[in-house]
Image (cartoon, rainbow, N blue to C red; front, side, top):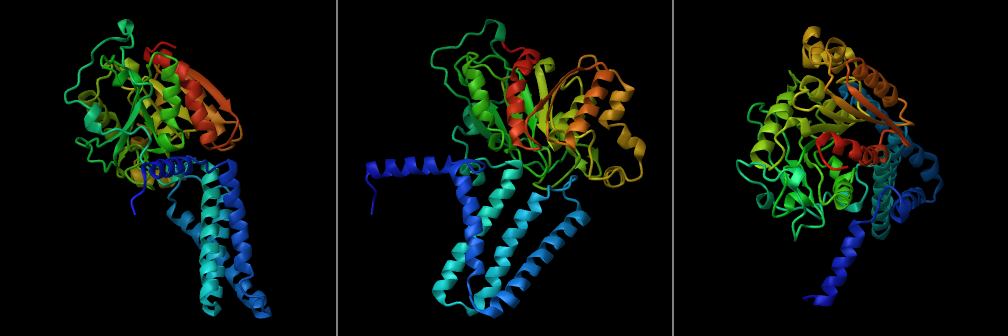
Length: 443
């Protein structure tokens, strides 16, 4: 049966309300926590006989613990992430696995209607556990982000990109034309790995209102890099980049940087260390292929004095590497909770995977070695870290000292929070006045 126009409008509003719900705080978050424990309780009382509680439940608990232990062992052996996981992550994963083992243990003796209730309880447990893992780093703050729905302001790349782009009006004599949009737009693009051969996933671009106007000025460029594991959408989902930049642009006549978010990993869990090494040519991709694509397809300021690179966590480390290895390309750096150097968890593992046995080759591109050997009087860095980030805060302090020792200008900011979007999103927002000054935008 076809819906009436009024019913369609109501459903549309309900859907927008639902996908806009927050997952890391508020009513839905509390509901998912409650559902997790209610679901576990329901699975525990699936049977009420003595044998269930004395034999099957202990076996299910033991099986869940074994699975968590095997997962932890696999992480130690394979080292997909250079840093260990906070203890709460295995806890929530363990509760999810406990839900699975309880459901499996009780399944054979259940009648059909109890099996339906078991499935519902298990779904609730898994959703609650997954969201509590999400809360640790907050990569998916809303339902829309978790479902990876298209951003609300996404436009087709063909509408905004041009071939052989050239800059038009300068910022000095630009005024907002009539009909300029109130907000910017996001678009997904393919940036070819022509020189590098890097297996890059599609990138994202944020275009401010001024860029979408009938007389766009030559805007500066900010290249933002995601974390590991992660994707080029990290800053859009976790960092709410479009909202933050739209708010800035609204207070500055529609002006903001053009933000390009390329793939710095080559895969969700990959770690190419942002280097040209045995792991691939990530540096060539980010320092050659991406800038070439930007200048060919976007009408931006061609002066690299008005270009910046930034990132969080792995992306912050990558941004530091790009700024120290290519200071003429990226003389402005935003490093949010980055590490002191590229790493796979240990110096030996990092060297073996990237430049097998060739320490000199690794040192030649390592940021701290470069900062100790060279001066960077034209480099400016804005470093952000969480006050409760006991792992990355000392590394940020070490990087700040090395930058200052190399003659760079450094601003260091500590924000409430740990290693999460509680720090990185507000960190970018707090850096915008400083970035605007460096990039030639009115502050």
